[in-house]
Each structure stands twice: as C-alpha cells, then as structure tokens.
Amino acid sequence: MAMGRLIKASLLLLIVSGCATNKSVTDQIQPLSHRVIQLEQKVSALEKQLSDQDQKVTISLQNSESARNSAETVKTSLINTEKGSQNSAARAEAAAATSESAAARAESSAAKAEEAGNRAVKAFELQQRK
Image (tube, rainbow, N blue to C red; front, side):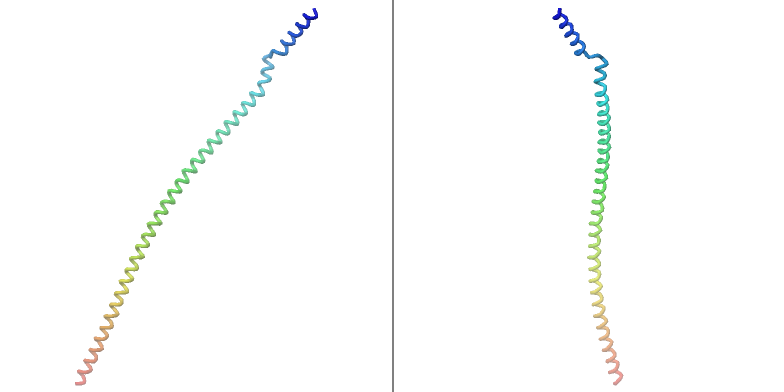
C-alpha cells in the first residue's frame, strides 16, 4: 500500500508539474509576443529610414550629375571663349602691324612730299633770281 500511494503521488506530481495549462502558456508567451511586436516595429522604422536615405542619396547623385554636366558646359564655353579671344588677339596684332606699316608708308610719303616741296621752293627761288 505504501508503494501504491507513492506511485499515485508520483503520478499526481507528474501530471501537475508536467502539463501546461492554457493560462500558463499564454502568460509565458505574452511577453515574447510583445517583444516580437516591438522588434517588428523597429525593423519597419529602420526600413523606412533606409528607404528615405536611399531616396536622398539618389537625389544627391542626380544633383551632382547635373552639377557635373553644368561644369562641363561652362568649361567648354570657357575654352571656346579663350579660343575666340586668341583669334581676336591675333587679328588685333595683324591690324596693328598693318597700321604700323601704313604709318611708315605715310611718313615716307610725307618726307618725299616735303623734299619735293623744298625742291620746288628752290626752283622757284632760282627762277626768281633770273
């Protein structure tokens, strides 16, 4: 009989301690459920932040590409302006050389005219003396 009581007590203890009730399972899972929900919310918030950052990076890349294209356009314009300035400078130097040549010819003509005028004055004076 003592043995039977021991077996019954062991079975009762096994049943009470080994079986979980719905309430005890719910009580154990509820904190985990709340923690999973919090983690899902954090993951969702991080995914949104990542998406926002991705959009900002995309916009920044587009802006930098646009700025690079503008810089290339300005560079090309400056190169063309420089070439135009060099051409203008070359034409101005050629015009200055032509002007200097014309001035030299004018001075030469003026000297010849003065010499001719002096000869005419001498010829007139000689003729007056006769």
